[in-house]
Length: 66
Image 1: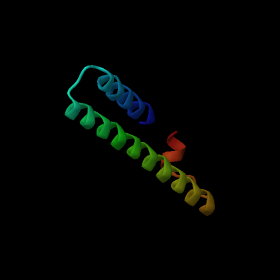
Image 2: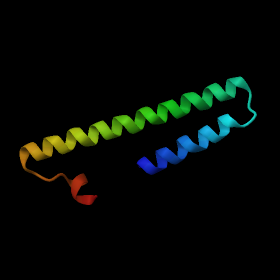
Image 3: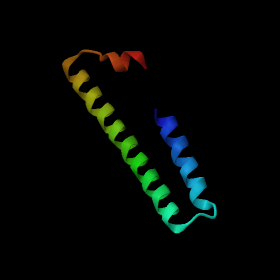
């Protein structure tokens, strides 16, 4: 998922660098910022889940699938 988010942010950054209307550039910038926020939230959730499972001594299904 992180790779897909990074790729999408890269695509948006490329669009912003092109000759676009200021309104479109702002929308692309906001979309990139939203994706960065999603990525940070997912990472924080994964970290919290890992801490909970380590504390309980049980391996989560998500961690075992990785």
